[in-house]
Image 1 (cartoon, rainbow, N blue to C red):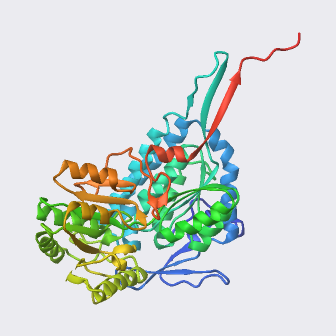
Image 2 (image 1 turned 30 degrees about the vertical axis):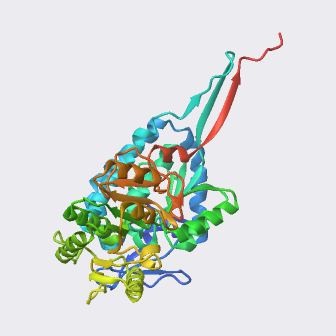
Length: 496
């Protein structure tokens, strides 16, 4: 498979980073041009070489930013209704190619095909949602003097860098791109090198409905991203990804005064209260811990079970694990695909092995599967303690690490510990306990009696090492703008 450029080019020496995207992807083996730095990706299903990525050079990053700068003034003056219409057209294009986008994501990361297609459709939903929200208020009128007009305007930052992850790249990119674009910013987007082809395809579908230079894409790894973040013309960096990457971005961008929005790692807890149906609770845990093979920022990574229901919940959870079908993510019958690569598999193996060495008991799974590909089975560990990495560091794999607690208060206290603060789930029949959890858990999102879900239009800010700033919703649109106060007096006196 070879991807074609988004528009014809006459001379390869004159290509920008956007033009050269086609040169960055080649299926199978490739002999790169002399001096090119390459990144090789393996197929998560077979372990064989699947892709060679030639990252954008610093010069190409500079050219992409220059294109965004050149397009900035015109796009800012474009009426909000016109910008919104472009996003609606882009949403229709994404929805029309959801099957193809899903297949690319499945091949690149091992995500189940059905979930990958669904993820593409969610991206289309987010583009449409931003198109609607972008037609809302763009400021406010103040109560000033009768002879003057005082307003607060919301204006675009200018050039926004959008850096997105591999594990759920379509919604992550669509949400940030749409919010930046509909508010009048121009964008340079860097998808993760682990999902370069899906990231390129989505961005290309959006860019086709925008004027030249409004959305530019550069592909590569951390070196490419650092070149982008360090560019003094980038006013805002919006990133979804690991905490380590987020910290580096904050340091580089902060050193020159740029603003940063970050949604980073999580170690999300799930607390099961007394009186909860064990079968239902086990299925909620399985959904939270094993969806996308545990590779979601909001995956359930810590489980606290009230001792009154712990045995029954664990027995059911072990049965759920035994019934899960592990295999080729493109097949309809598969319920658990491979991890994204050997690197991530090594992290999961290390966390589980060290937990077992410190006394955790393996109730299900516990070791990589034989054969090709980066497969790890659904795993349940009982008797986990706070000193284990599997309870403190982001595992990002299909592991339910369990601690038994004597009462709800103890479980709530433990759920609130740790350096992450992205989300938390509480399963309880008690309204009092539900309200306590909503009040006391210092995380961006609290979910009660449903591990996933939520209405459109919500907003949340992660805490501590999970990031900073609005990650979605109308408040994200606000974060994509800066405030300006304007005081307008009446017509000044003139000379006769």
